Amino acid sequence: MKKIVATDRAPAAIGPYSQAIQFSGLLFVSGQIAIDPQTGEFVEGGIEAQAEQVLKNLKAIIEGAGMALKDVLKCSCFIKNMDDFVAFNGVYENYFGENPPARETVEVARLPKDALVEVSAICGVE
Image 1 (cartoon, one colour):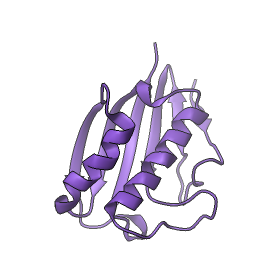
Image 2 (tube, one colour):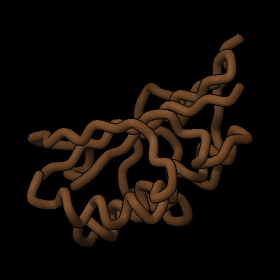
Image 3 (cartoon, one colour):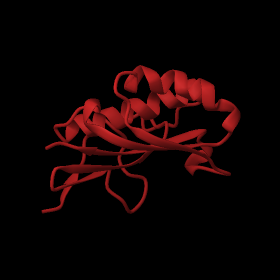
Image 4 (cartoon, helix red, strand yellow):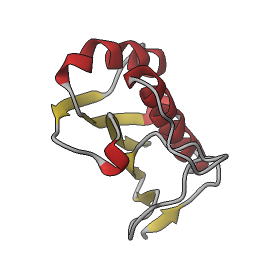
């Protein structure tokens, strides 16, 4: 049965979507951008500052569903400028350094709120 996951430790959805959906041992986490859940404000700064907030948000939603970062099977990463790839990886590695999930990273023309990065995830437990 499909279950909607929501936590106040991550930003509320800013459109017609859920933070995450849990279904049959899987968790599908919607793309996160750098919004601080405490203030509701977009985090300004470079790719490192935004990536840090994005991954904190992702982690909070995953934990809100009773899972952990170790349960992440795949991430989809969207960055505004591929020149930020190395800097993004530096932050990403702090969250997924050991046994990292499958992933793609794609350069995109534009993201919501003109964010520099957005990340979504699929998690699973047996």
